[in-house]
Length: 271
Ligand SMILES: Nc1ncnc2c1ncn2[C@@H]1O[C@H](COP(=O)(O)OP(=O)(O)O)[C@@H](O)[C@H]1O
Ligand SMILES: [Mg+2]
Image 1 (cartoon, helix red, strand yellow):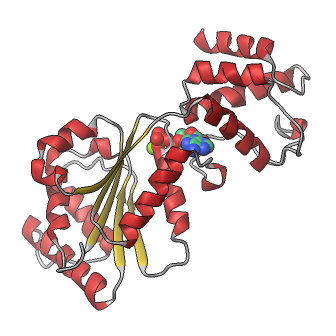
Image 2 (cartoon, helix red, strand yellow):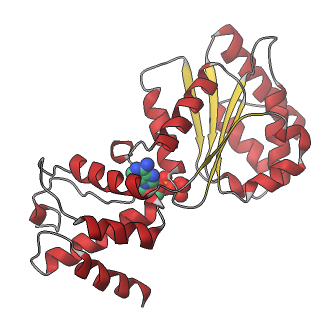
C-alpha cells in the first residue's frame, strides 16, 4: 500500500509532474492563463511568461494546451528544451516540427520553407499555429534572432506565428537588449510565488483532487503556516515538502501532520 492510500487518498497528492488536473488556479496563475488564451486567440504574436524555477510555468503551459483541446484550428508545436548546438540545428528542428521540406540546406531556404508553411496554414487553411517554447532562458541570441524573423511573417491583420515563451527571469535582460525583439512582446507576465492563503488553498486543492473526503484535514493550520514559511510560496517546494511531511506521518502511523512533524521534516531537509 502506498503512503497516500494509507491516508485514504486515491491518487498521489503532491507529485511534481506538470499535471493540469492538479493545477491550483491562484489569481496570478489564472490571470496569466486567461491573458495567454486571449493573446493566442487574437493572434497577437509574442507572449512571454516569466518566473523563477518551480513557480508553475510548465504546468501552466500544459493547462493552456488543455484549454484548446479539441479545437482543430489551433495547432500547438512544443519545444520543451531549446538547447540546440547551432542556429542551423534549431532551424532544422523547427522545419521538422512543422513538417516542411526545404529545397536546400541553407538558413535562407529553411526560413523560406517555414514562411510558406505559415502562410499556407494561417491564410489558406485559417489555422493558428502556436510555437510554445519552455525553458526559454536557454534561447541564445542567435536563436532569438531566428524567432524574431519568424514573427515578421504576418498579414495585414495578424501574425502568422504565435510564439509563447516560458522562461526563468534571466531571459528578460537578454531579451531587452534585442530591442526589436522586445518591442514585439505583446504579453509579458511574471508569475510570482503564492502568498500564505494561496499556499493553504493549493495544499487543500491538491488533497481534494486526490480524494480527501470533505471535512477531513491532513495538515493542521500551524503545519501549513510552517510550509509557507519554509517554501516562501514556491509551488514546487510546497509540493515536495508536503509530500515529505505526509510520508513522514504515515511512517509513524499518524493521520495528521502537525507542527512537531513539520519541525522534524524540515530539520531533515536542511541536513
Ligand atoms: N498553480 C499550481 N498549483 C498546483 N501545483 C503547482 C502549481 N504550480 C506549480 N505546481 C507544482 O509545482 C511543480 C513545479 O511546477 P512547474 O510547472 O514545473 O514549474 P516551472 O516550470 O515554473 O519550474 C509542478 O510539478 C506542480 O506539481
Ligand atoms: Mg518548467
